[in-house]
Image (cartoon, rainbow, N blue to C red):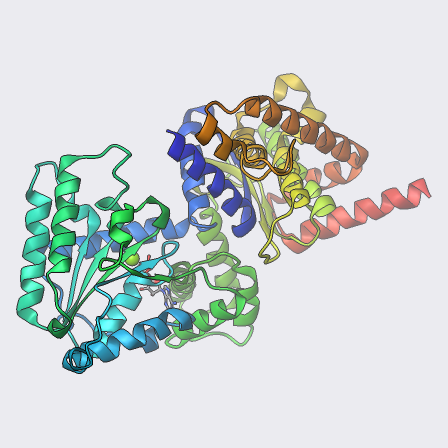
Amino acid sequence: MKRTSAILTSLAIALAFGGTLLSFTIESAATQRALIAQILVFAALGGVIASTALRSRSGRAHAVGAVRGAITAAQRQSCNFSNVAANEQAIESLMELKDYLRQPSKYARYGARMPRGVLLYGPPGTGKTLLARALAGEAGVPFFALSGSDFVEKYVGVGAGRVRELFKKARKAGRCVVFIDEIDALGRRRDDASSDERDQTLNALLSEMSGFYTADGVIVLAATNRLEALDPALLRPGRFDRQIEVGLPDRAQRLCILKLHGENKRFEPDVNLEELAARTVSFSGASLESLLNEAAMLAAMRDDGGIGKRDLETAFFKTVAGADRRITATMAERRSIAAHESGHALASRLLSPENRLARVSILPAGRGAAGYNLCIPAERVMVTKRDMERQICVLLAGRAAEQLCFGDDALTAGASSDIARATDLAAAMVTELGMAGAPAVSLKALSQRCGAQQGAAKQCEELLDGLYAQTRSLLQAHIGALMALSETLIKAEALTGEEATAILDRALSNETQKSA
Ligand code: ADP
Ligand code: ZN
Ligand code: MG
């Protein structure tokens, strides 16, 4: 349990600052529990919902093919480093292995010991599987792939047998790449919920790996999204002792990936990939690919020219928030959702104007959202206490707007995920980051050494209460702007970021004129 909550807090930070800022209003309390989990999954992916579905689909296809037998380079459409954009550093580290795979005897002659295993780690969809396949393709050797979850079976010994079978095939093939995806499924730290089956499988893998010699020309690659969850035994010298990070692309890298996947697509002249790269903060390679594909499908359906700006726009919102659905809310509900979303938008405009408002909508969207507010965060590497506080305020502003406009009895369940995320952030500030109370104490580390986290919950509560009060007064002070946006939203149902920003800015400047 402890582990989960620790991961969730880090996720909350990743979500708030690495991810597209998306506030949902949830339709009904019944769906809340599931939704919170899903939204946190979305957080884990660094802001991209669509890639969850996309990934699990492609992951499964992989596993099925793999169980049936080895996937060799000849059977698959060949793939090489030119199919990978933006991962220069990872490719550079793999170059050496490519040379080795081509002529292992050369390395044996010089007495060089190749790394037995290479671990690719990083968020989902960043191209780890792609890199492994590309390495095999570049070196012109067969590619044997299995997913960690295929190894872990109910019956003790089955997984271990599969490992031995895989390596037997690999040995027979001679020079080759063996790829183990999701290695965390079998190589998890043994302290949490250890199982005999998993241990046996892991041991089989480790002993197979130590049976290779440099002259064999076999490279074992593995991939994981969760480096911290791996058993340290896997990372020891002679095992997966080389680790290559495959991170989320930055703006320039996103442009490279968009260009690569845009090569076979026809765009209208109004399309600007640079602008698209700028707004796809925290998208992975896989989600960029899926975004372009989504747009291409829209264009194909219309069938009257190339992919236009409009298609990309629709695909973008569909990718991050789900497709719009028909509105079914009653008028009273619409008012409440509109106030809630306007609260987020206004707080964001006032507190973090560097984050660009991209869309405000009261149309139901994916995952039971009754409306949403999408904000594209400025790209950043460091997060300050101020940033964290502001983010919490923006999250709480939906609830604050409900309370201001309709009173205590009309509070909705729609604010549940906002509150949960704000609480995660506050907990991280209190227990991990030393951003509340003593600035140089990690209550989390302290509790691991000395037991219970004294007073952490109380501190979180105080922090959240304080920030909520601030948010409420902020909205109260600019209630005219809140109402203006909310009223337009009830009629229009969805506004672009520019429209919403213009309405807010006009109302805000009227206020200053009046008070002057
Ligand atoms: P991972 O294994 O890290 O989860 P994948 O390798 O399965 O990610 O990536 C899924 C798809 O996303 C790839 O097949 C490719 O279409 C696209 N993709 C991801 N990263 C890149 C990249 N750096 N360059 C080009 N395409 C990419
Ligand atoms: Zn909200
Ligand atoms: Mg993969």
